[in-house]
Amino acid sequence: MRAVPERRYHHLHSFNLRMHAGELSKDELRGWILNRFHYQRHIPIKDALTLAKLETPELRRSWIRRIHDHDGTRPGEGGIERWLRLGEAAGLPREQLLSGQDVLPAVRLAVEGYVNLCRLGTPLEAVAASLTELFAPDLMRRRIDAFERHYPWIDQDGLTYFRMRVPQGARDGEEALELVLSWATGRADQERAVAALAYKCDVLWSLLDAVERAYR
Ligand SMILES: O=C(O)c1cc(C(=O)O)c2c(n1)C(=O)C(=O)c1cc(C(=O)O)[nH]c1-2
Image 1 (cartoon, rainbow, N blue to C red):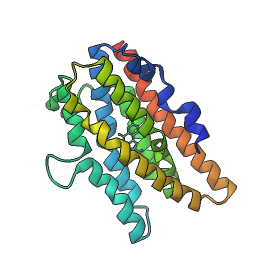
Image 2: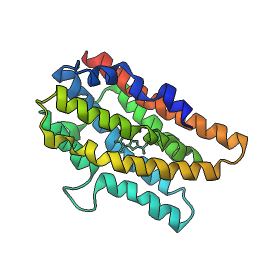
Image 3: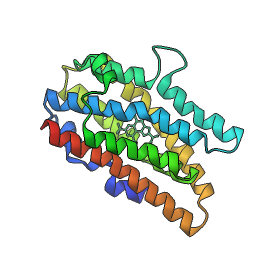
């Protein structure tokens, strides 16, 4: 499960490498924030679809936390709100992000692919697909560092999304890994879990392909 993202996770994508090296223009960074918002706002939707497949109170109690992390428990809180503030810190009005009108076609399809995997797949596949999160915290730390160093025009407060996500992602990744290891005891299930994770890596990769092509 770790070998797949080691080779295919978007930390290797040229757009992320250029982001870390400080080579992105303002338009490229804004284009990324705007299109990634489309991904962010669908995370609680795919988590609700996943939640509906979990059969015990213990599992649902644990998974529902992910929805709260993104939606908050009252207006003005949660990851989606924090991403809107990241957009504002980069000069993107929240109305523009919320309207969704500038989202690239390939980004819509990539995100729909992930949502549909969770809608139509087994619980094992939905949970396994989230395991890119094992790799996300390191990437977030790298990104915070790059933003502070290379993109000082983005207000520091805008980075709160990433700072909060480091511990959340680490906890979510470990929790999902435990589930996958306990469920996928046979070869066929193990292969399905690996395939779901590879698919998810492709979703994130396609998103960056589209953004890089459109804004460079
Ligand atoms: O910025 C990133 O590189 C990145 C990657 C991922 C990921 O690996 O899917 C997630 C996030 N961010 C993220 O912020 C997030 O909330 C999240 C939830 C999930 C998931 O699949 O359940 N992945 C990710």
